[in-house]
Length: 237
Figure 1 (tube, one colour):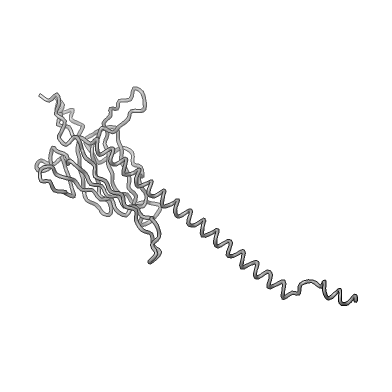
Figure 2 (cartoon, rainbow, N blue to C red):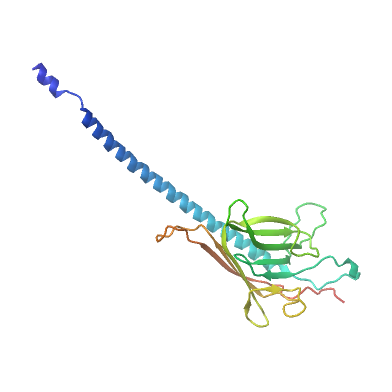
């Protein structure tokens, strides 16, 4: 009787214990893989959402400041004081075009500063020094208009890791889109602004594609109307 009872209450064998551990390990791996996949999916969705937001904010600022672009036909009575030069210059580049212009876009934040609502603004591509082969869209901003529309001021990153920044300009005289613009030239586009600017901003780092697991691009497009297409000539004799 005693031996039978001992046989009925005996513990697990080593083989049974190893099988139980193996099954538990497989279940744990499956649970971990499931939660890790959910975490990666959540992080991917958040990253893509952040990139879309970055593109929309960049486009909103570009559109707002382009809408306030202007050039002036005013000249000082004393020509030796002509140190300011308003301009609208759009040039081609790879992968990013460049535009330099003057605009009524400055907000004076400090009291008694010698500043107005006028500013020099530029948008262009700049190589990221921390990531080889990566181009960022940057914004140059200066609250002081001087004789060099492409220099000076402060440069800040507006959008990171761009694939394309393309600008085209609608000529009101021909009704055609052109890839460059220059108000400083003597003939052609001299002394007038385009009536519209078409802006295409393409960011890298979108959703993964099913084909090669690469990342798609994020494309933001806008057409910006320029209300002040003629040079300012008020108070000119």
